[in-house]
Image (cartoon, rainbow, N blue to C red; front, side, top):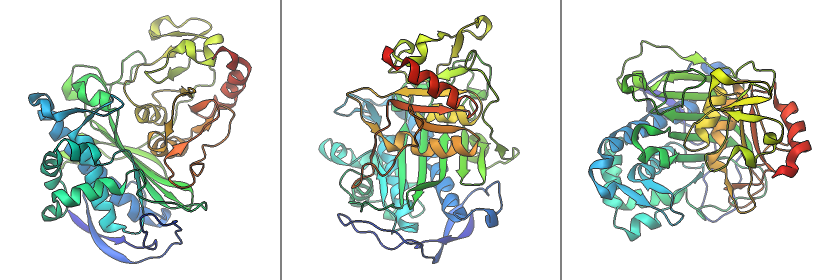
Length: 408
């Protein structure tokens, strides 16, 4: 791999349990990357940070693919967290890998991520994570049990206390859609990494190893049995530079016959007939648009007053990926009274959709506030829920939701 010059401390050193502020500074070190970006460095303020993010997400996807090959040969590779969400060695491995690599390159930037090491410690599974991370890390001899635990906890709850002012930090979802991961080929899963600078999301990378290239309207995304067409993708986005994808299979095989493709949201102008996706934990009847439209799952039989409901199990980031790539027109998620909405389920998806021409707000049309959780930056509190659209439909749906929210 080529050596690239890299900004390692544009941001001052961060300290656990201290309020965090981040004016920008520059210094350079060398890192590895296996592919160039689809736009020139001069146009992207955070080009180097994005290169690092692409590189580590690519290697995280390699880790996932390798773990998944052996997932069903050993019962010890499938775990249960306290909330009964299935989580795998790959989930912890991805967080450890990303934390190790980004902390080495950007030691001043905190990481906000999903996991902590408590489960691994209590179940003596740290060695399994060391095994899967070691050959993916740039410095494998640094991958010790102690360093793995510290790396995972670097992104965990209470790792940092942020100041109320706009902050700079990475947001990681190690595997969005862990249920899909343990289902084998039956559902999509995504590795997602975003960078927030002074309160603004400036770049994002999503890797989906089992993304399917079949774009037919009535296909159930990710469940087709034809393994050869499940090439996977890397999606990258930088503020002001658009959203782009490249086949992950080309990257993983060290071949590059396919170039980057720029993404655009679809051109649907009418809510009727739009392609809509919703969380698998929610039903169409639980959402306010159900008072106006029936949901159909067969694109050949979409009649007047209907929408096409796409299946895209599991996780939220694959729905953002679908909207950003033009496969879906709308992703709508209701906020239940008992639910907690995590930043890592949305951050990278937001910039990918925005840079592809779409829009993301809460149900009242307000931007999602990533500083609402002032000290930890782990939660968001959207009014009503989250609405992701191709932009053209956004104001129409906001109006419909406002008029029909009583059905919830």
